Each structure stands twice: as structure tokens, then as C-alpha cells.
Amino acid sequence: MAKNEAYKGFTNSECPYMPCHEGVERAFNCLFCYCPLNAYLCPGPYRVVTDRNGIKRKDCSACNLPHNGYHQSWGFIQKWLKKPVIWQGEEQRRSNSPSLPEDAEP
Image 1 (cartoon, rainbow, N blue to C red):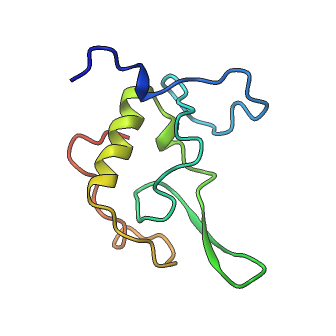
Image 2 (cartoon, helix red, strand yellow; image 1 turned 90 degrees about the vertical axis):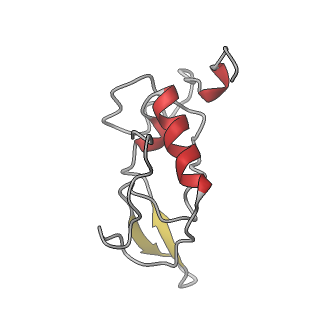
């Protein structure tokens, strides 16, 4: 384990979109500006939109889980990427979202 954990996040206070997500209570983590879980089922709030080509896409703009604290968001993303489940275009329901992995505090 590395003693310096600076790789787990950073805050870009100069970003013109800052703050891009409301409700972040810890240090704002910009490392996952584009969430690597976008193609997978996850517990974060999302809605399904259909683009002009008829392709269903996840709109995760209401989700702040990848941004809420350096250590917490790093752990959250790493735990969900250990056993990813491909998102198949379904609407979010409690029954189709896998349970939160142990120690993956959002």
C-alpha cells in the first residue's frame, strides 16, 4: 500500500463547470469527471434517455457518488469495477441494481 494516496483524487477549482454536482459533502473529487461505471449497473441515481438514433443511454447527471470525497469515491469506483455488470438499457430499479459492495461507502 502506498503511503501517499494523492492518486485517489483531486479538485479542479478552476473548472468552469464547478460545481457540476450538487450535494457533495466531502472534498469534491474531479478524478472521475467521466464515471467509469457509465456502461455498468450501479447504485447511483440515473435515468434513461434515448438519443436521436434511438440508442438508450444513461444520464447520470444527478449522481454525486464518484465525486463525494477522495477516499470514498475511489473505494466506491474500485469496488464496483471488481465485478462489473454490463448495463443493458433498463430503467433503474432497486431490484436490478446490484447491492453495494462491502466497504464501498458512497
